[in-house]
Image (cartoon, rainbow over all chains, first blue to last red; front, side, top):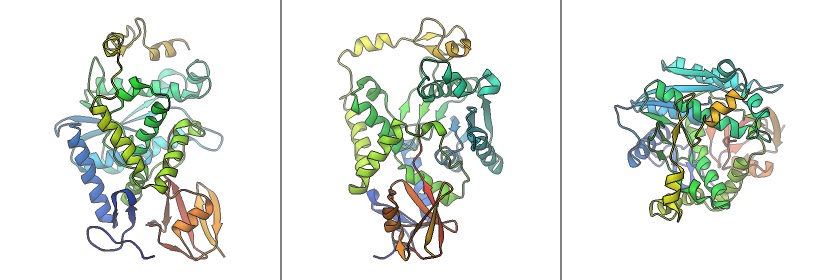
Length: 313
Length: 64
C-alpha cells in the first residue's frame, strides 16, 4: 500500500480524510481548513465582516484553532477564557489551560478576557457542584450553567455582536445521539449551528460544526499551536465520550456516517420534522423574564439559576 | 528494540516494521480518534514505523 498524495499539488500528503476522499500536504490542508470554515460561516450567515466576535477559548485544540482561523480570515475577534478552578493531585488543569490561552493571545497580539470563577465568585466549579442538586453526581451540569452565564455576560457587557464556540461535528453528533436516544424533540429543535440573538442573549454560532474532531486536531498540530492535551478530569466516563466512541466505531467501518448523521438531521430539522405538536404551548412556556440580580434572561420568575446557585453559598 | 508509542505519558510498544494503521489496531486504538506524530510531523495511516523509533499518539477526542 503506497503513501497518500496531496489532492491539490500531488506532493506527499500528511493528512487524509476518508469521508471526503481527500488528502493534503501541510500547506494545502491549512488552506483547505480555513476555506471550509469561511464556507460554513457564509452558508449559515453566521456573522458579517464588521461584526465584533468573542470566541470562547478553553486552551484546547478546537477553540485555539477557531481563534486562529477567524483571526487569519481577518475578523475582529477577541478571546474569553473562564478559569473554572479545576485541578487534581497531578494536574493543575484550569491554570495550565489558561497558560495556553494566554500564550496564544500574546504570541499573536490578540486580546484575551479572563474570568476567574474562584476569584470572582469565591468558589471553584467542583465546590459549587458539591453543594448543589444539579452537580451532586458530576459537576458538568453546574459547569455548563456557569460558563453559559459568564459567556453571555461578557459578550453583552463588552458589546460583542457574536459569541462563537468551537463545537465540532463529533460534539454535535454526540449531543444529537444523546437527544435522539430519548427523543427530546424540544432539544433537537434547538440544535443548530446558529442561535439567533434574543431577549438579552447574544447570538451564538459554531463555525467548526462541519469538521471532524481529528480535523481540528490536525489543524492545530500542523499550524504549530500549543494546546492543553489533558482532558478535564471530570469528563472521564461521561456519556458524551461514550457516544463519541460509538460513533467512531461506526465511522471506522463506514466513512462519512458521522457526517451523514449530523447533516441529515439538519436537513430534517430544516424541513420541520422536529417541531413539537404543542409548539404554541412551548412558545408560551419559553417566555423569559429578567433576573432581578444580574439582569440576564431567565425562565424563572425570580432570580436566574446562576444567581440562585451563587447566592446559596 | 520495538517501536515506542507514547499516549499522555503512557508508553506502548509494538514490533516494527509496521504501518501506523496496524500499530493502532494492535493497541486497540481507533484511527478515528488518534493521530500519530513523529519528530513533529503528522503521519498518515500507511506510513511505516520502524523498530527503535519513538512516536507520539495524540488523542483527538475530548468532551464532558
